[in-house]
Image (cartoon, rainbow, N blue to C red; front, side):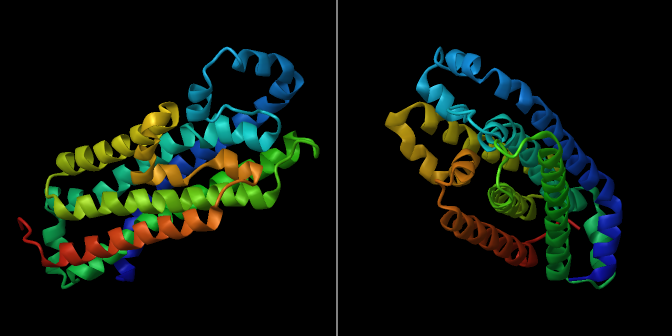
Length: 269
């Protein structure tokens, strides 16, 4: 890794990282502040849920609101969290490689005698640093809000809340990995953004369809989003370590391929 480049890229992107992190943390706090209202009207909410098909409730993670863990999993981690971090992972991965090639900045970096491997590895570390910053803020915000706003009877265990965030980090470690791979292969920023974004949207859609239509639930087996089930983690029913190992493997493979392919491909410099 090239530390001067890492320092400069972190300086250039820190506002973006903090912005996404604060938005994520604020949303967790807002959702947490709403839970006491739902808890006070739990019978009415459950009656309303009975009006919707089980498949739709399963797809949206709305099967249960019995405690804070199930509530925050459904209301935030099962939907808005995926959208926020999906946008961040795709956008950042493209900006850190394909954008530099597209705008001509890569030629300048290579003229400073920094190798392609050093550049790609450094940019990967910048992306991972951004994901870590966002998840630290998200976890801290949720933990603080839970301690202040949720009573002990409904509170989620710190271990479960940590696992929800940890597996979420690994999910976007993988999403960022294949987005970084796409970014390493394409010279045009728009094409890279469309390809990585389209692939992420496809995976997300396949996971949703697999939940709704049980006859094609096999679609979920080919999308990394199926490995992240915050509701089951909150309920203690998820295979956390199996999902973690698979997502880690996907991410490592994708980042390794990205660096190797970027090293050997022709660049329009």
